[in-house]
Amino acid sequence: MALFAASGSSQAGRPGAGGEPGPEAASRDNDLYELRPSEVAEPPRRGLAVLRRIGPGMILASSIVGSGELIATTTLGAQVGYAALWLILFSCFIKPVVQGELGRFTISSGETALEAFNSVPGPRWKVNWIVWAWAVMVAMTQLQIGAMFGGVSQVMNLLIPAVPVNAWAVGFCGLTLAILLGGGYGRIEKLATVKVALFTLLTFLCALLLLRRPEYFAWARLAEGLKFHLPGEGLATAVAVFGITGVGASELVAYPYWCVEKGYARFVGRREPSAAWEARARGWIRVMQFDIVCSMVIYTLATL
Image 1 (cartoon, rainbow, N blue to C red):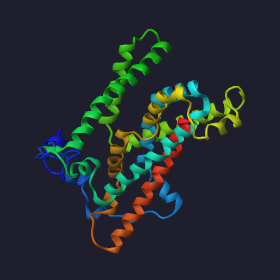
Image 2: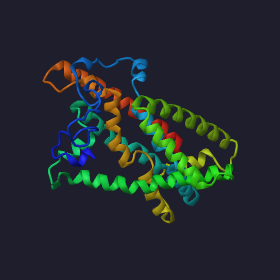
Image 3: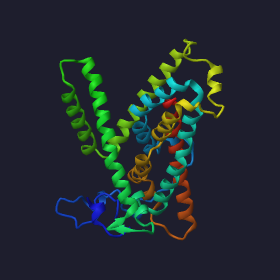
Image 4: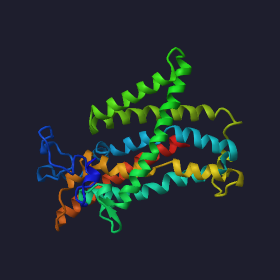
């Protein structure tokens, strides 16, 4: 992996960096991480134009709302009722602050999150210790991803018992690899947007159905969940819910990469001491912040 072959901060964490390009290497003109003067563009100013430029947040929302939210939050609700509603809201609202700062750094510098981590002072072996810690964390999350494949496969096995769970798991793994390796940012964004739209629609339909069942939903009980207290018996589950809901560590690091591939950093261009560059950077950072807010609203409502 090029990340661990690089010893300086200028190349760590950048896809395709860290070695001499071979004959199969893509043309430099196709390098989404290169800041070229020809791609500098002024940021959109009006609402609809800004809306057309969002996208990384849709990928974020589609990756956040999943088995963790569906299982962990419902488990906490079964234990403490509506009392922990404030905690879920706090979890979804507080983490985008860090997300926005990482995105702002990437847009204004052209460096990715791992490049930023690699430039932090401290012990290093080829790369900074923070990068190694992140790599260990990502390796551990593969167990979680495997569990997700297993859970979805079990559901499909219940629907179609003739196909064993292992076959479903292998099939879903192959489908995921095909999507990730066969497209690029544009395809992933489109698929994520469709997924977010469908999931949001289903979530609202379920919420509307619950409004007709007072034993499951009541506005008075909803207000109880905003009193900022938590029964002791649900503390362990509440801590787990706080960690798994909203933007996680993996998404925080991945988001700046999506901002680069969307084009935000290329549109700003290389840093230069000029009022025009500063205005352009501020404009594209505002687009990114709007993207973050849109995704936060979506995954917060879906999580609730």
